[in-house]
Length: 77
Image (cartoon, rainbow, N blue to C red; front, side):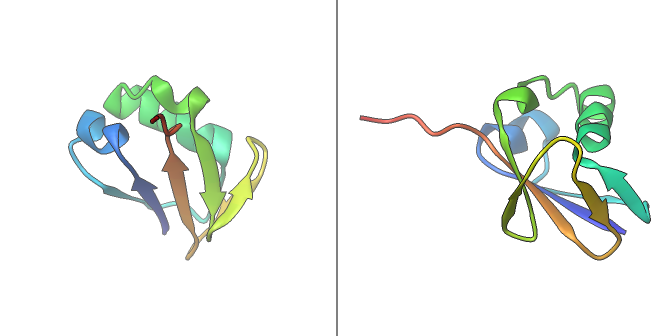
């Protein structure tokens, strides 16, 4: 089981802040593809990914029991 956390407008697109995937291991890129397919979240390419609070790249693998968070860019003045 992999826990996916969504922040800011990503929560609005998915209508949830947390998604559970029944996967033993999956790459960040594969998770993004699933989120686009099931939730039509196309903004993920601009987001940072973090596995257990450590920044992660597209090819990093999320293992069962870990948490993957997607953080959209922050704007402000």
